[in-house]
Length: 200
Image 1 (cartoon, helix red, strand yellow):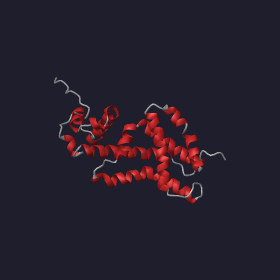
Image 2 (tube, rainbow, N blue to C red):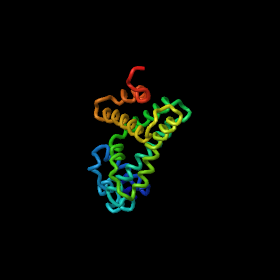
Image 3 (cartoon, rainbow, N blue to C red):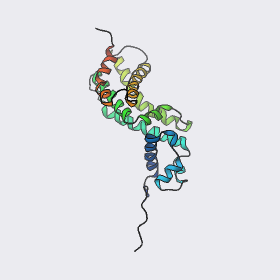
Image 4 (cartoon, rainbow, N blue to C red):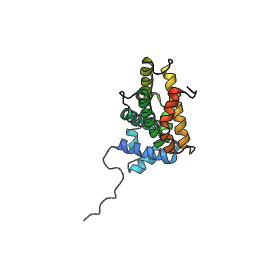
């Protein structure tokens, strides 16, 4: 009886998904600079030319990784959003979902926001940003129409809100704030964003 061939990580499946999973693992462990299509092909057990059918170069791989990240963030925000909730509770749920994603995927989020994307991906990237950041902007704009948030450019208010959340995420990623403390503090953070620091 002939010996069984040596098993390989990839076997007649979805090579694109296999390469993206390997790329995200490398991103987490070593950073974007360590990504190599040739190395990913080696890990997947395919020829070094095989990834070229899915990604013409490293930048195309980075774009695909960023889009995958936006897709997952969009799913997390959609799952957390409940338009029937009062504004503060709704924003708290969205903020908690964003922060949880940020804490679980700091390297991926950095890549998503780097915006070093080739023109071929710009339309897809714009749609992905709209699905995520744009969803929060629409919540803020709707609240403005109901008189629940101050007047002003909703895009600017969304930027301030996002910068605050990203600051908390950065503190947690850098070890300045335990992740659990960051998540536990979301309700207070949203309260302060909505009501300010000034005594009432």
